[in-house]
Image (cartoon, rainbow, N blue to C red; front, side, top):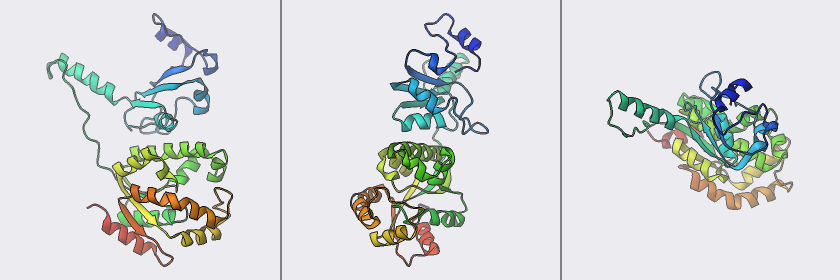
Length: 293
């Protein structure tokens, strides 16, 4: 990706590649996408993408590979979106290591064909709150973060900010579109943040890769509220929390929790029972007592 067509044409000279001015002017599907821009790099460009995804997607081969020269943070918005859509991704850290190996060999610091390994990343101490809708994740996250002296994040709020519209409207486009954005936001947060308390969406545990991401980057805490409490809270807040299936709330909760509760329990490092009498102070104290020291 070059800013000027003339520069792209110069880069293609002497190769089988050819420059195109727009995505629409390409008559083939792209099998490899390489980002050589600062988009996604930490700092002012961290939330940028080199091209809007809705323009890029129609030009992609179904098995396209994405390579981003940026390696800090390790996941850029471009790679996060591609990963959420099922494409294979890689960042620029491997290229940096291979360059370092060659330079070290030239200057005699390392024998030829030596291999350098990436140093272990910083230990991440995120606390991921999982559970069904209305289990109290978004309410508890700020208080727990305050007591832990770390930032709090609401995954739904981050998703809304990137989409530029409410969750209900995003979900109205279909659950797949919603899950792609959820995947992207959770993955970016895990890659960028070393600590914090995160209120996740109720369906984050449906994605096995996201469960692994949460478990590897911190502690997963399941707020286990009984079905009748969930129903009461959802019915009380029906305008802001409409039914996902169009069925009565009680039927929906019972049906979904019958199989999803197992997913929550398997994903969690810590299970915290929630009742109508539970207070933020009591819940946060119990969680803090059970976090790794």
